[in-house]
Image (cartoon, rainbow, N blue to C red; front, side, top):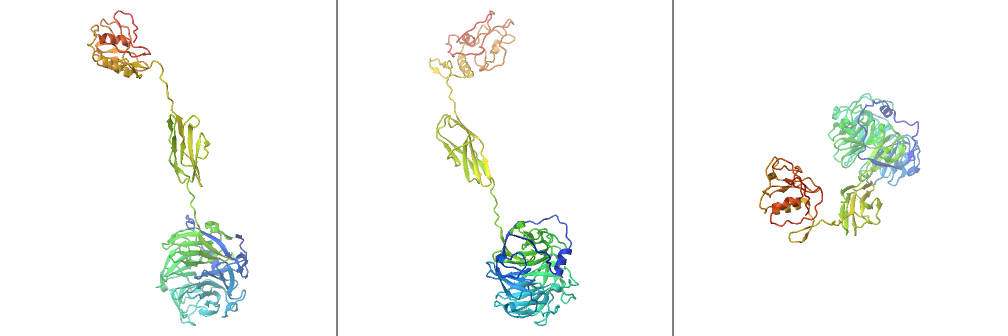
Length: 600
């Protein structure tokens, strides 16, 4: 819902001056919304009026203060209508005291009573309401039956004098709070002090300077003000407006003129817990690093968290017990009424704030003419895109079943693909191929999906293993005549070496020379291997030697094949048949100068 702000409406002269004239500090820090609240409209139409009704059928005229009772009913001071309104949890608005448009001091019941600019409001444990009747300089009490009376101060006789009921006086009070013992605490704005009122109506000054010469609040700001922390009269305030009390009796004050939040113990010790005096801004931070601009309303929950209506910034702020300030909702320097979450929610000068036992926050939007409710937004962290932790593996088989496995974190569904085409029904992390064949071999991938997106696994190739037939002539026969599997030439030669180990010794025809045959026979590199047979018959290994040897007379001989080379060395031993050895051939040299081509 979006409501246009009404024109021509202003705050009280003093508060408007504070918001308009306070210096704005240039800060690098910005608002953050680490715990955003979602705000929705409870009541109000966004335009001024005095209509009772439900939801946006009701109308307010500058709703200012707000309080909540144990049943969840809200009580709102309708500042310019001079009335006090009740808003049920269902958004039903009724007027419980005062008459719209009539100003006065009359004590009476319900609409017969009169007020003069009601602002702050609080609920006592018995259901009694305490209202700051600002321009009458009094605190008014409203019973559950609607009976209105003066609780503290003297009507139209403002001052700072402490005293018993009928003696002690106040000056333009704007904030009020009640503790569990029935003591009432007042932000005495005109006196720049915090006052305590007993259940019998006696007034004492708890903190701040009592008896300071001041001028009337409506006509101008007090003549003296300060920001000094201290105890009792040693502390100073500058137009304190909002006030709240926790279960331990500590008070929290929105020191509007100083743009700070102050704490006052039950003993009157005053400290500044957030903000820096005279430094306005929107920065979130801890303690004095945070900035406010004319804060007005303040509330405290059972955990000690503070909630602040930062009127000048049109935002709602939160302060933890450690002093950490964050922005819950609102967009600084934007003035309208927009329901939303965090920075999407926009206010038009929020002034009053209350919190219930569940942490829900209620705000009066003074110039927006509405009452809103804020709840902690449910922040749903979107899931990350799935990440594969198990990838399918490639495999090559000669048929039969194959299982491919994949797994991805955060995946909600799977789909297997073969060569880029989805496989019907294969939507599990594991897929089974019953029998690998030419029809289903190829590239398999798995796609894992969730709400954040999809991711594809690495590709796995499933293929058929090729069984090659042995070409003819690739067998050798053993010495016993049995057929054996083909061997690599190196293995054949090892077999030859074994036979040569039993030879009678070097060929007596061989002579030593420049490249002695006693050092070995040499063969060329064939496609399989190159061999060297030592002259002693005990070595047969690959060799990169020349393809020729020198004879004893220094001439270079010719080559003969391996069979002829081995035959004279084996003597009477039978030469095994090694099958067909193709390639360049192995040769030995003959003394007579011609080449003999042997065969096996």
